[in-house]
Length: 192
Image 1 (cartoon, rainbow, N blue to C red):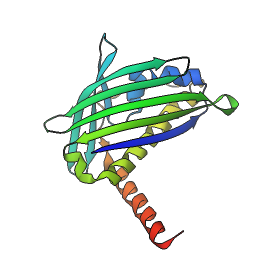
Image 2: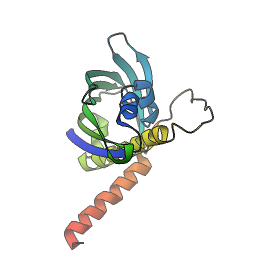
Image 3: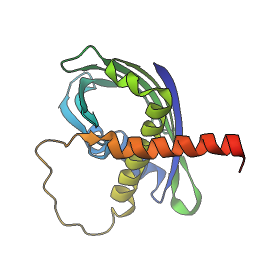
Image 4: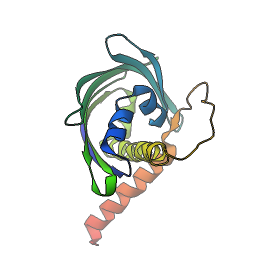
């Protein structure tokens, strides 16, 4: 199942601060629900894992992500990733382009275009549900990045990182996605 995601978010941090954050895989992994950075390789590729749980179905993917374009002048980041489902026949492929543009009042806007191709038991949830859950995961990611960068100038208490990332539970996301899709369908049928 192949699909595309296009999202954007505004952040009250300079374009340079956002750039430096988004090209640091260790910082990005902290903001990806269920993700863990396992290894940074000398060839500028990174090994990581993601755990997702939808009801009784738990999936764990391990794969490699590589930056294929880092244009600091234009603040454009392109990466490709590929992962395999642990203990299953599923796989995921990702190509993502992110662009950071200066915004008003010293802020920035981040736009992301991603092409994702999924194979395996995750596709049983259907395109609409997967796309909506992906949007909601992106919103969580954006909120986390904002939290880290918008309060970066404030003193913070040192927090201990958990030893193992908790699997992102997609059940609340799936319910939210279901209700969002249902509301859209009803609006189409009955009008606004």
